[in-house]
Length: 458
Image (cartoon, rainbow, N blue to C red; front, side, top):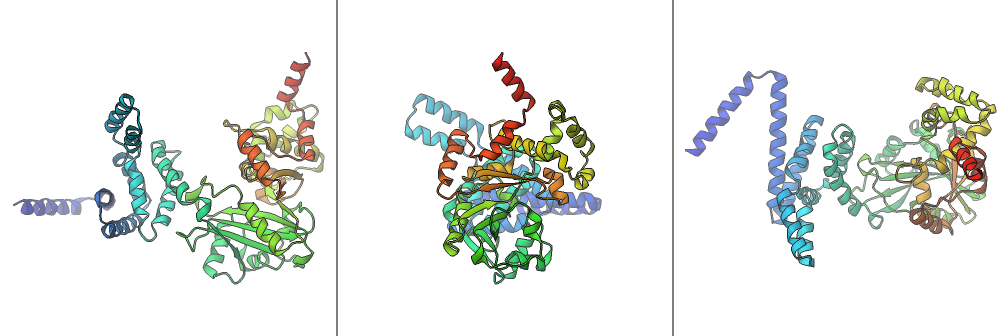
């Protein structure tokens, strides 16, 4: 009898679907798929046999991959709603630990507060392609967080697990050259996030004899790089990016080079944003280069300053207050639109003040947690580099003008100082800065700094 009634109900439901509009039928079908995926996830959590668990994990990855964006959003809601910790069990564990604060009760409390979705994600990772699916999931959750903050606990669980799976011990460094398989080279073109690669001819120049390219890989994503690092072998510190990127530039003998310029470092996986792979990745690449080319003794970046122009826009009042520099505020105001920025290179008369402002921005402007405001600065300073030089007119491209008024920066990696600089930065918040950059920052006389000086002298 139960079987008869189940069939009857399903038959009525199917007939009802026929009467719905195509749009409503799509909504109902999507919700059915998400409900089925939820059932699979619950089944995976209670399954104890490893072969059965692996099969269920494969089915979950396939079901998730078949969902559209709306279905995936509903699935993330399901992860938050159905796989969070049991609040009553957490409270009982807290009370038990208060009554008897020993190791056993602490372990029970830790078990209670861990969301079941963490174990679910661990088990999904058993499936072939499971790691890639989880990385993609986290990337989509990150996109949705601003509009759906209730997903923050879900994102936090992804971060907790991905940090364990993608630590430095699992990551390998590989050189990329023209003999690298085409599907990897295609991803280099696709993932380049700093200076776009305009087709295969452009890529061929970036892989020429006086260039080097390296990628970091994880064993669970053998054909999908995590980071690309592009290097130019030159003499002396490079100051202008277009000279390095010119596809028609002459290829020089790498044996004549004394400097390695890291001109592009691209994260490839949106789902791993904010996941640290270690603090000495650049040092590892530098070590590889020095072993191959012992004459190369200087290791530096030519890096963008992506937040500088936005910071100028946000500080119009302070710019206007700098003595004798009201024309600077007028120029910033005039070029605030994206269209105006792309073609509005600052004139040479602004060179000195903009270099001072850039030095101030990099060394003084901070986030609420005390870290430098500029994301590229945070990366290199944490990796043990020294902020060495600010380069005027280094990137005249529309992107360079839009992001940084054409400025670029050299971060210098002194290999025997990298670890000391790293320790000073992470433990004391102390930035390694060259004298020339520090002197530029001090010469600015930022309004707040000037007010503080006057207060102290009074």
